[in-house]
Amino acid sequence: MHEMLPKLNPGASDFPALSRGRLETLQVNLGYLCNQQCQHCHVNAGPGRTEIMSAETIDLILDFLARSGIRSLDLTGGAPELNPGFRYLVSQARAMEVQVIDRCNLTVLLEPGNDDLAEFLAAQGVEIVASLPCYLEENVDGQRGKGVFRDSIEALRRLNALGYGMPENALQLNLMYNPTGPFLPPAQAQLEEDYRRRLRETYGVHFSRLYTLVNMPIARFGSMLVSKGEFDDYMRLLRQACQEENLSHVMCRSLVSVDWQGYLYDCDFNQMMDLPLAGKQRMHLGEIDAKRLEGRAIAVADHCYGCTAGQGSSCGGAFA
Image 1 (spheres, rainbow, N blue to C red):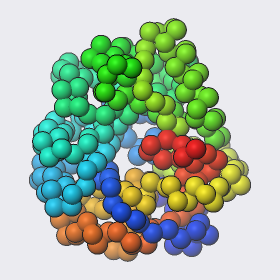
Image 2 (cartoon, one colour):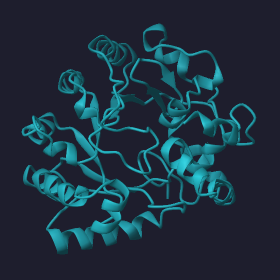
Image 3 (cartoon, rainbow, N blue to C red):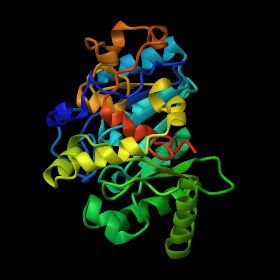
Image 4 (cartoon, helix red, strand yellow):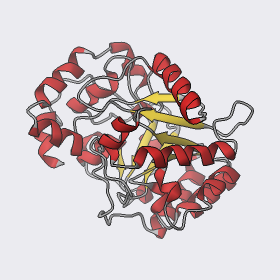
């Protein structure tokens, strides 16, 4: 992934300066182990990855939440559910009345040993953000592997049976779309209508909201762009589509990212590029108070244009 760094101009980018406001979300990467290996993955996650957060670091996460008063815990990976401490972290955070978001690839719910995982998430009131890059089987399988779409539909049906994504239930099931190639997502509102109609009519599946996410030109996706000679064209597209009004909504202004070892980054993408907070020396979760993170400059590089292109892009979807 580090071959992307020179192309993205860390420390010398012309991307506008940013600073963090009030810290509202702690986004935690529980490890790079995943049961899938997707073409667009900015984490380079997969079944062969061994990096995984320890029980000691999970306790530091809980201590930080208690000290900081942060009310939102956003869990990602890899497949975060494959960390042995996942359920402990979720249940302890929920006992503190912290909102928990699980960024789920859906098929992990069907993995051996996870038969009751969906029930656990429902019982804890966890919000699920589920990856489903298209409503067409051939597109999903082409990007994520053969059989992934059918397994994803089965997982969605299980979640619906528990009340997730149903109009009369408070359990949130949001889907995440990302493009299958080097182009921007379509308008989120219209795409959500298309997803809702196709998934309901064809598969009887329901969900709460659809989020669109721009593919970042880093890690596995960035390397693919370079190998196909498309990297410069894609960066030009992101730059030309940049909307200044999106700068006030980028997720790094209210979020801090924690890697599997407990080190802090301005966002998940910077984490994958090993760009520490504001480009400074790495800081560990156990060494800093949340208040010290507010008002700090944010490390930027050219990949940040992905978050401000078009309708904007964040872990919560488009800005408009």
